[in-house]
Image 1 (cartoon, one colour):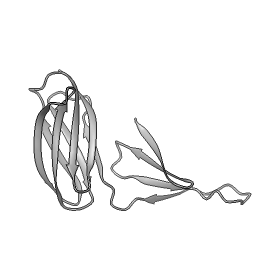
Image 2 (tube, rainbow, N blue to C red):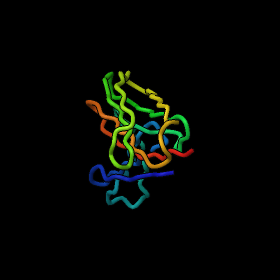
Image 3 (cartoon, rainbow, N blue to C red):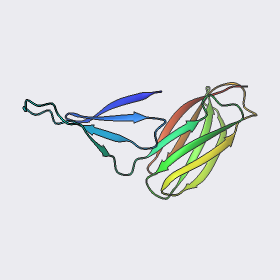
Image 4 (tube, rainbow, N blue to C red):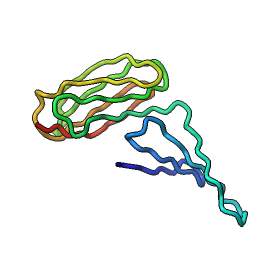
Amino acid sequence: MAIDYLVVGAGTWQMVNQWVAKRFVMEINCGTNTHQPTPQLAQIKNPSLVSIYPNPANDNVTARVIAKKDESIQVAIFNAQGQVEIISSNQLLKGSNEISFEIHDLESGVYYLKATGDSIRKVIRFVKMD
């Protein structure tokens, strides 16, 4: 399970896990008090998250997109040489959306799914296996 940490501000860390559909920020008060700080979770408003499953994939791959708003996005699948293999335009609704692709005609190897919209810009690596 891949977990990344990002410094959002002074003393604030953001934990992002590609398998969870929501992002959270953990805020810890690091003042001069002698007691242990109490962590608090605050959900980030309107997250934009793209994940892909299964990975590795055989015949089909699905992109899960959490959209901040209703919008159109373009999703493209590139091979390792940067050539476009599949391209699709999609209308998303605010909230959770899933876009599936048939990839059984693709050769085995590493591919990249790129989702681009007004509030979404994400590239995710995945592996196609036979």
